[in-house]
Length: 367
Image (tube, rainbow, N blue to C red; front, side, top):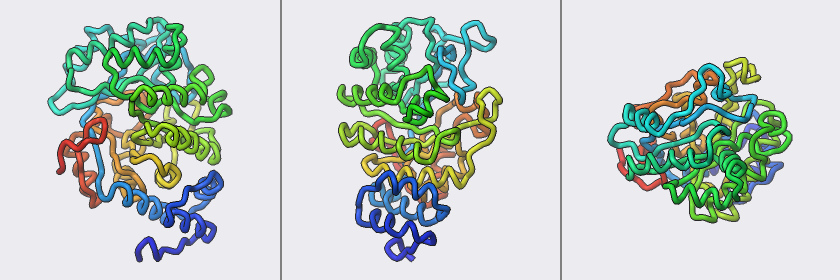
């Protein structure tokens, strides 16, 4: 039975199915109804239908390296086990020599992207963060720099006393190519006041990305789900990303991130379920009709669910990473990185076409 003949087990999804098949935009009420339904197969098949229209059987990955220059942070987000106070055991801030040594020890030919995020270290001036980009761009001029989240843009604006526009301009001059999607968490103030009160507000995060788009950068967007947010707040988050995308067209990909709760300091006691992970991926694909790609993040949901996600709306499996630290500090049980062979096996094992890409989804190689 193909998608055009599919009849939902959950009859309340019939109207949503018709909207999807006719290319009509889903509403907040539709999104909530999808989350409230247990008809995962119908939701997944609808998401797969949408993804097939956008991307066919193509699934993308990039050879990249994660870099976290400092874990010292002024914020105390309830979900984070990575951050440290400056005088706390395990706190670090890399010098530029240490940064280069860290990268040189892990670098291999084929890496096309450095993904840089870290703590909001108020003991360093804005120049430190610019220098991380300058240093890497000078040493590795052919590697794209994906650095600093919307929350970090707000932090830089405060410590430097300049506007978001000026912050991003300076980062671009230093060699910034794109911004990651982190720091979004859940884009409602109720959530942020409870989980990350010292970080950028919803409006700050969105304004940072809007400014980046206006300055010519393509960026990423994430959603950290599975803690205290309501199902409606997940949908509101998606709609806020969708609304900005309508204005700017600057988002390349959306990444649902399952919260990692193993450490007691995170304040969260249980993991998301496989059912919830797959449903959230599928609903993201259905709600974000104007974003080309949905990324399944194997660090948080594991390689097996990542593979299944490729039939539920995902068209990207992220990258090699080399050494992911932030989710693993919170208790992620997955590998800290994968090889190209691993990623290709994962994609082809789902019957999909494995495409190595650069940061901007230009195809480097088809496997």
